[in-house]
Image 1 (cartoon, rainbow, N blue to C red):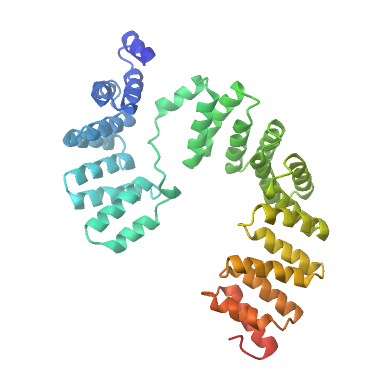
Image 2: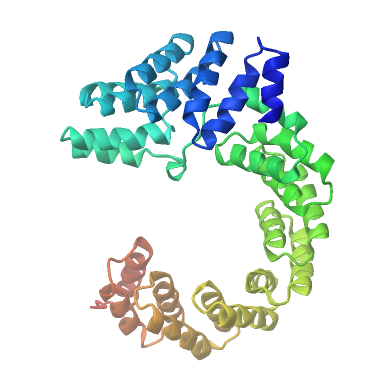
Length: 388
């Protein structure tokens, strides 16, 4: 703030300095101090749309609704169909109980940007207020990114990235860009952060995520390998590399990564699970069973490892052991159709006389899915009788 105040004196005709100072003051709730600066910025740079949006927001928070509406209209004159300006106008409409005008502005906003969660959420509320619950439900169903609100792009603020000396701030900036669905914008702050802190594994991990979103899988793999080298004991970073290699079907590299992960993080149930999958795929059933038993023991609330263990037992001619595992799962979660399906499949494959009972129990547990209904038809075809 001291720096911006000095710059305002040194360069009184540069709009950036009051704009940036006002942003800080508004962030601390000091709207009375921010308002003159925001007005000054719009006078000096009337075509900078974000300046009008910031002024409108500050005026709205200060209950100066009519003036806020004028600021948002100034933004629209320079950026037609700007969704943020339209959202601002809708909020002014609601403040003045102009419900149909609010609906119109919000419909224009979502037409301009269907993924604009702020407008979709508010539109749903307006539809409900106007007695149209069906339209409200449709609006809510269109809310993207879990309702995450994104700030309007401020090109002036983006220019400051090149001068930032705090790697964590740069990392947060890049993460925000990725969350907003603009991974290309994450690259400059990440490159700057890596220049400042080349051995920070968090930055390499975010770079890998960004490159992956941009389709550069080779670059993402290289960054994740650096991440793992810098933080060998971090289970999550190793799992990121494993997921990338599995998605790319790079079998040899995947096996090396999983083996190294289990060695470095021997208590990681997730890495043992990955090791179990690889061992089972390679036919090393005893090894696979050991990994799945470890995972199930350490994560008893996640049934995937137990189901994989049952599959290994079935392949190892240990049918009763596999059945026992699945029965234990069904005691905890009797409506789990994935477990029920696996049990019925085993019964059909081995002509187990208990299959009819297993199938009946599965059908009675809840609404059967397509796979279970298909197994019911298979059972009827094989046995000539109904399971119920």
